[in-house]
Length: 204
Image 1 (cartoon, rainbow, N blue to C red):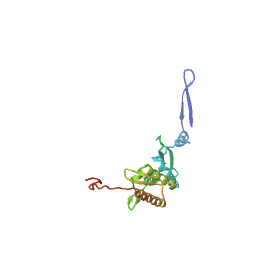
Image 2 (image 1 turned 90 degrees about the horizontal axis):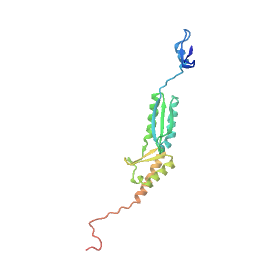
Image 3 (image 1 turned 180 degrees about the vertical axis):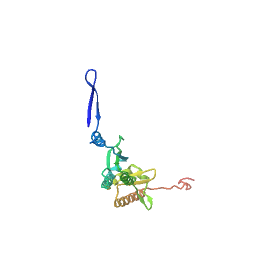
Image 4 (image 1 turned 45 degrees about the vertical axis):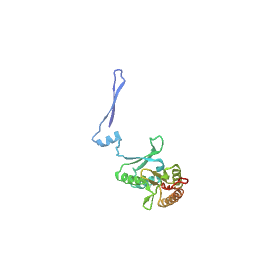
C-alpha cells in the first residue's frame, strides 16, 4: 500500500510532500517495489565509428546486411547513423549498439574488415602511379568509382589505392581499367636523355 502525506507550513499551505511505502503480509515487498518503482536497468554496449561519407555511402548496404544477419538471434542489436560533428560533413558517425557481447564482437569484426578496404594489386604489387595524385588522376578515379558504385581512395603515404564496396567481379573490371589507363599514361610520357659529353654544334 502507498500512502501519501503532506506537511503544512505556518500559513496552512503544504510545503513538504512525501510518500510512505508499506506492505501487508499478503503482499511481498518485491511486488510492492515493482508497483512503485517500475524501473528497469539494462546494460548497453556501444561502439562508435567516424567513417568517411564516401566510404559509408558504398558500404552502407553491406553494413546494414551484417546487422540484419545478427538480429535474427539478437533483437537488441541495432545501428544508429548520425551526422558527425565535423562541419565539413566529410565524415558520418555510426554507432553499433546492443546488449550482448558476442553479437557486438562478431558484427564489429565484420564491419571493421569492410572499413579496411582492399589494396588494388597487379602481379603481387600495388597498382600505383604518382599521376593518381594529380587533379586529372583524382577525377579519373572518382568517375571510375561512381560508374561502378565503389570508392577508390588514394593513399599517398603508402603509395596504394584502396577499394571499398566492390565485389570480386567489380575488382577485376576496375583493375583492368586501371591497367589500361596507366599504359596510356606511360606511353604519353617522353623522356629525353642528354649526354653531357657530346659536343654542341658550332663549337670548336
